[in-house]
Length: 158
Image 1 (cartoon, one colour):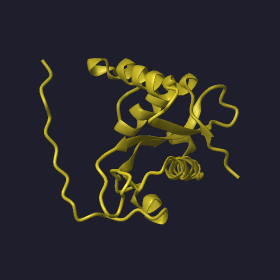
Image 2: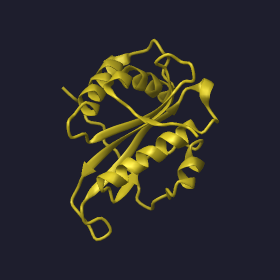
Image 3: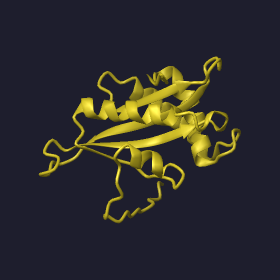
Image 4: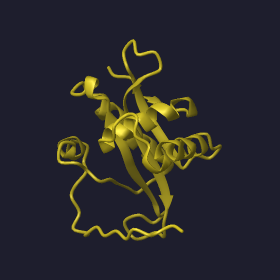
């Protein structure tokens, strides 16, 4: 059995490293300072007394502080609706596996633990964006494609 444990602030640097793997960014690259900014967000939100962010990780076997895989999620409170009166919605992000540790069930263990956390928090639904490679994993956990089109506006921060 694979043990996915709850991420702590001590895992922030490794969670950012795995985010780089997910994004296909070279290890040394830190364009715009995104790595430190992400690390600070993780330190703040994972260390909060009433966390609205949780992460679950699998340690690399014999990897002295290195992570094999992770899944991070954010709990968001929106206005309720008939299918989710409480309005709590989870968003799963940063699901990544170190390339040397893929195809071992680590991401599945992390996402399953994160889904259980969302349930325990009262989330009525969980959203995510799936890569084609990961779609089968999410479908096996009950995720379905939605009919809602996704749109995005990039704001310029001055």
